[in-house]
Image (cartoon, rainbow, N blue to C red; front, side):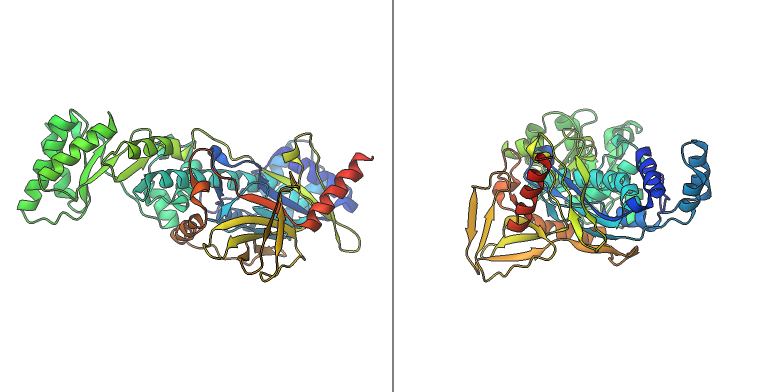
Length: 484
């Protein structure tokens, strides 16, 4: 899975269209495609961008091997001159993207590809595959971490992920979204992230009794001694045996640096509160109580509301699969075509669903912050040549309901462009940060959201507005098409 050639990770119609453009070379104009999504996953108020590092690797490795050419030839639908062209194929265009870990909102470009249409068409499927998956899991992780209110979340869904790639890159995305570690050792090796874990029920069952299993584990791992206490009877056996082992460790002068218990079944609120009292009464007030068992953000939020004495959470299936919302829904749409004078002519896709009508043209995004609080006020999509001064008043309006307007007084807001150039003329000009650095950046990004936007149910919407020029172009195109 390291340095794969994913050139054929595409839908067949990308290649058949590519051959069509090749056969009609006048049709191979430079174009702009935008990758974006229409609705926040999980009914939330935001998403987290992730997957850019893998997109970069994919573009760098993009080439057709001899085996690829032979396979395509065997399909009987590609002509020899087109296959000869593919032998020397490389991506030659520009790519702009929102960096990983950034808070993002619907309908704004996450990735913008500027390239000859043959190239821009080919990369569609892989870009969506990578960005959709990792952004989904990063977003789910951020929601789970928000529900935990500062408690550590460990990702350990590898055995339930939809295959090795989903497990590895899902764990990477979960780390970006805020998890403190993963059980996935290969993810730890590939991306230099913390790996964590305890032991299974089988460890307990393989010994003559629970105490011996705990004692043996503690002797081996005294600095990371989290004991699974629900194999037989949590309160009558598991917790008392754990306390016995901790007492013996303390008496032997072994520092209790990181120790505690894990609950994996039963009424987690009730059991954790009872276990907390037992541990405290025995003098182990700093012992960790961790929990697992089909957790998600809603269950964690409920347990916190019930006063559960849990301070560490292991989340598996519902995180690595985003079980309640298993698809991100990103799309990739043509936004402009370059004419013979080198100017981009805006293009628009129509739909009976207003939200599916695309935003045309060569665009960039400004993030607008409240100057006093540093919180996000809105995002503004505009044309690349548009500039704004923070000292001037800024009028914003909802592009779907343009009569809804907000005027920001000059010097009350700040602006930040959020897209960065990733490739220029086929060469990568961007260095991806390490995953843990992206995680730290993501935490700062989440701090720019109002609490009302982060709530799990019925969150406040952050508006994504269009500049007046871009809006006028969109309306003109709509009227032009409707007259045909």
